[in-house]
Image (cartoon, rainbow, N blue to C red; front, top):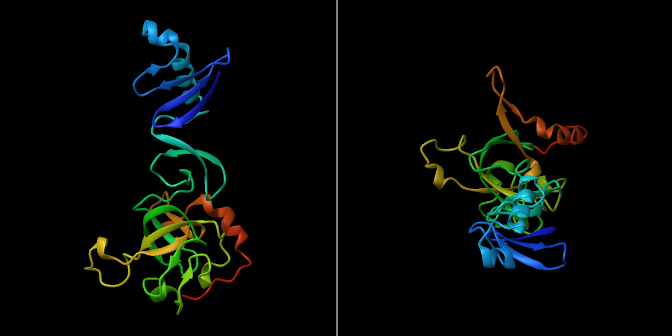
Amino acid sequence: MAVTALGGGIYEVESDSGHTYAVDLVDGKCSCPDHQMRGVRCKHIRRVALEITGGRVPAPGRRVVDCLACGREAFVREDDPAVCDHCRLPPGTTVRDRETDALLVVVETTDERADEVTVPKKGTLADFDGGVDEETTVADYPNNRHYPREDPVVRAVYPFSGDPDTPFEDLQRYSFPLSRLDRVVSRPDRSGPTRSSGREEADRRDTDRSLAPA
């Protein structure tokens, strides 16, 4: 039986006989005659449960996407951007800017593309990254031009710079292509932060590329 997730906990099941039934897994209901007449947990409900357990269809509350960052198929929460758990930077994650080596804290990972998001004349990276005088996209920003144009946009703040008394929620947000930011993790010996090993491949690609000055 072929199972297709329709969203909202509803699944379409095509049976061996060619009939198609709707399974509401949250309420434990199916549109097939066996369930409608006898109220039993029919084979279609069981099939959906097996497909979810086997990782072949998303569970209720999740959807299947092609990750905007790596291109791999993944299951994400229905309200989350189309970025897999491996690539997504959750709010509160400390990251390091590959261009300036500055530390930032992530506010959100979006499913907006870097070549579609426009940064205004003010409120860009002007204070930290050289700045631009006219409106441009995140992808066309001077220090972002060698990162993928289709990269998801990540918004982050600089809580370690400026007035330390400024409340976190009042800090200026800045937009970055996801590939520009490295997740910072603590070393096992607690000797200090280091880049996540998941970005080592990207680091190797950049060994011959000079970084723009801060």
